[in-house]
Length: 429
Image 1 (cartoon, helix red, strand yellow):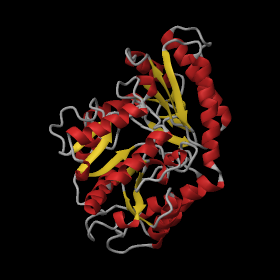
Image 2 (cartoon, rainbow, N blue to C red):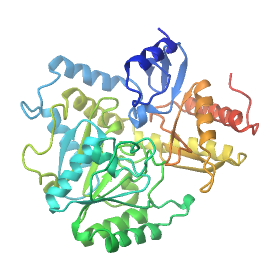
Image 3 (cartoon, rainbow, N blue to C red):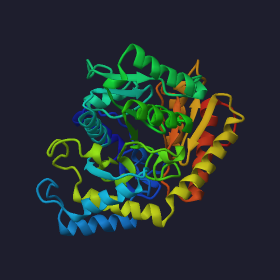
Image 4 (cartoon, rainbow, N blue to C red):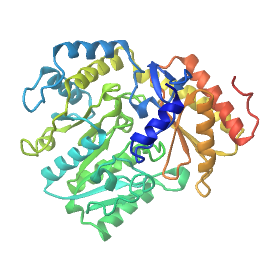
């Protein structure tokens, strides 16, 4: 078995639409991964912000094995179990907001988003939804409509569901101020949809696929006030930014405000498929019984992993670790950027770090992909993102040893050297 042979089999058997890389994993531990050719990688993709506690954390593995010995599936709709209830209680207590909360569990981030929209519509009796440019909310039909990025997600799939509107996300690097974004929302209300018809505004506190763009605290506070004024449900999409990734359990905490509903997935169960919607009890309770849920929603193995994950975050202080790792990464990137004109911006919140190639007028997508490929050749897995494909994102496990963080920085330094010809560093052997 080799990467080459597995690639040939994949091309014959797997849909072309399932985009992937040619790193065929056979083993992983914490921040390291080994492929079918025996090459060792530092994994700074983390399954796209999933393995926040690293691959195969011993406490997570034990929790899943213990659950496996009890039962694997009953369907919560048929024979419910205590661990689901316990996880709901913990999420109710830990999400921002001093109000009564309830939780429902699902399987994917897109499911969480769609159920949050259903709750908001059922609660308000309205149908309109507002999202933002650069947003990513999933690959389902409604998720695509909410997503503010066409390339890779909407092309070729026809008409989107109606009554979904987009406003520009504030982005200082691209010349979009908070005031301009809020003015655009007001223009939507005047020109496109009466605010009395808007059920929800959904926003990522840090955009994921959009390029790790950080929502300024004053913007999130203004959205909270706007929603309060018009009776609109504010939904925080914490699917990628949540679970200690940004130095807080939830990224919205940095702004000091609470959303009405919080969607989460990815890092919630440390590698097992699980998502959740947590929020105001009266909103979460708005759908009739049977209106939300699913056969695999809240699978017992994934729930066991999530309960273990919350313990790991607390006991190992992964919020602090995220801040420390993020500071080391952004420091290294700022040092590189000070000598590389092609790096237009370095940004991050906690261990959710990115750098953008080119500027607002001339994005350098080609250079971005060269850096990603050169880093991979040197043993570092990183990912591109951004609406124009010119951002490199770093999502290290929050349990990554600092020595491996430093190793990753040196690999990045060498990959950028190779791709740009700036002569920053010697090649990494």
